[in-house]
Length: 96
Length: 410
Image (cartoon, rainbow over all chains, first blue to last red; front, side, top):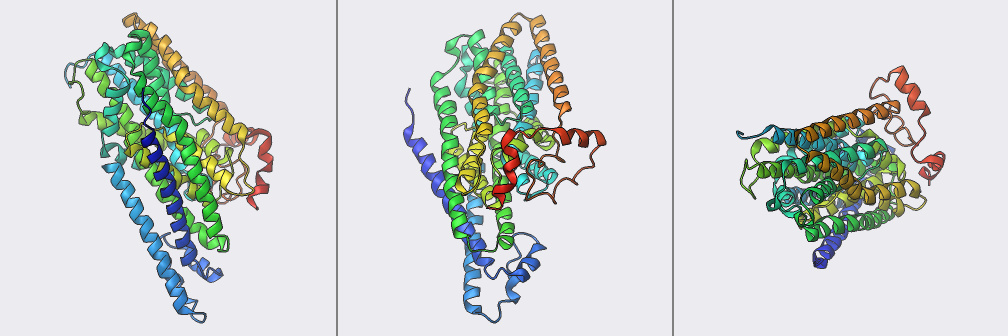
């Protein structure tokens, strides 16, 4: 009887990296897109689908550093896109 | 479909019943945290899970081959009676753990049942011991640790990154992420567990000489197995959902997201490498990990301990029931009939017992319903009797439960 430690170790490492990485990236996305998360953006975001409400919050941070906010939001959406890609890869793994 | 004897027909029906119990036993894995954080309403969550289970059943037949060709030696003279006995053992154990609200592994119940019945009827040479250790025991022990550690680190990380963020604004994002990873878990569950039943039915067909050894499951097997597990999932094992969503620890959206993502990653990584991994242990482990990862959160080790005990007992207990059943079923037609009657009687008794303290979509979040008080409760009109009974149910967590309000503010 031989225990396949290599496969077990691979599973362990892959799981750890994937989970921590995905959760980290997704959280960055949440923080970045919800940055000026005052009451206005929270209220405007509470209606509407979970993934598509970021742009709707773009109206209020007009005065304070619009460029930085835009950069943060773009970065946030890049993070979400990366997570979506990971989900797609997951589905690919399930199918394949 | 010709040449199917009555006995094989009974085996197929029993396998589908097992598949059904598997579905409602494992709804909790994908949806418990989603329901307890309020990311989805209970009914919506189980409906989504059911659809994804059904879809998942059609996606791959990789595991189905492993079950019929790996753990039990198909050429050692396994008869349909043996498979029947194994299934009865698995169903009985599944129902018992469901009554207790414990998320035990349906796969282990199935393996245990099959192994017990094979040992009695065929002898030790009918079981591939190496395959059992490598494909069942080791992943079962490793899975909760792997998933738990991943979920714990992910929980820490997400609280650290998001510590300055507005919780109102971020919780929606967490819920969306949680729904996505819960969907992945459901899909993977469909491909994994529906296939186990397909594997068993295929094994029965092989032993009955209906299909050739090592062949893929026929289409009607895939369709019926997928439907059975989806139906079971939709019915929802609310008792187990409550244990996992509320009993182990109190889950905030961040934790739910981390736990669910950890579970999805573990399941995908391991199934990609060919392990027949137990979804239950992965998900329970990741929920515990998420509980450990948030400072101030309370993991109720008494509940966790009972759960782990149930895991340890699952394989031998289902094996014992199946061994006894196999002894009876080997006696011929009257034996099989006796087993069927006894099995139905046990199911009826357990069902009656469950009616005394029903747990439904309406009261699944009752224990320490801190974050979700507004979103559930009005899902279904409760009968007066149900409401009265629900009011006197002792919370599964026992004496720790009254403290549930405190950590939620931490």
